[in-house]
Image 1 (cartoon, one colour):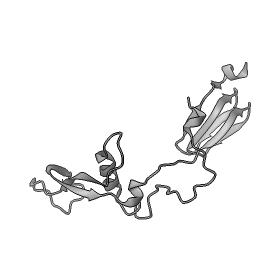
Image 2: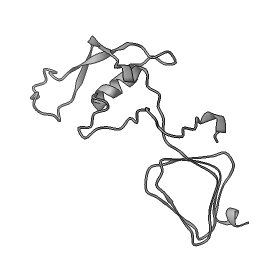
Image 3: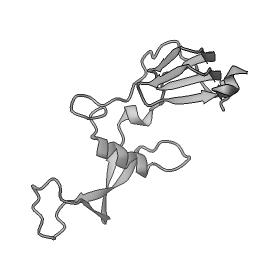
Image 4: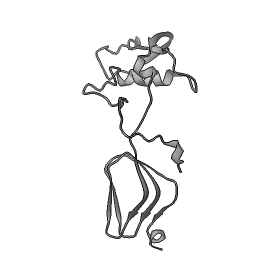
Length: 155
């Protein structure tokens, strides 16, 4: 269940940054693995730091596996962390996700609801017997009221 005041409604994304990988799979110039390491290193429930300490990746484990073998396991050496200054865009990051808001969603008998939006918030979802829902994307659906389907919706 959600509270309306939990969502800040934006009329447009303006100058906000949508965090999606570029054609090389990088997020604003950072590799996905570096971004994940940064997120893991961030202190819980405190202000965004200017830098973080990351574990050094040690691909030479001494186990006789070729460095060129990309399938070789990666080992971390906690004794040799390095400090990474966080880019300004990351320090000022405000995360948003576009959401579709509805009062009620009603799918009648013979009706088809196609879900092609990742976040849907509604008061109620009523799916009558014979109605169909088709999900095209991974979605989060948040209802502040009721979800009724089949016989419960037909009453």
